[in-house]
Length: 70
Image (tube, rainbow, N blue to C red; front, side):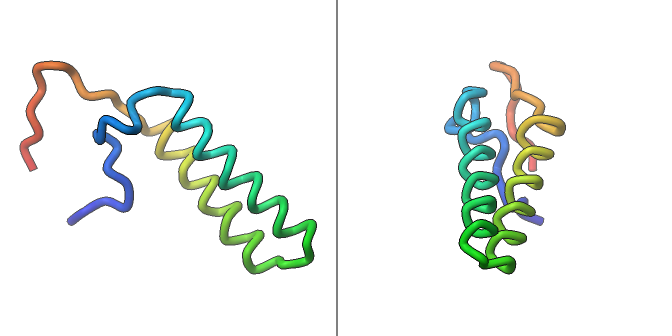
């Protein structure tokens, strides 16, 4: 089964990119709440929380010699 985000893609290797994605999602969620759109606010806040969990808590960088065996 494919994951929603491929954590081993080289794009997500730098920490600043992962943090920036989380900040954009959470920031957009806050913006939507301020603009009185609770549905979109909840959606983007939940997406930001999911990204924070996946990119910060569950992130395991792939070693140089490790091959993908899926």
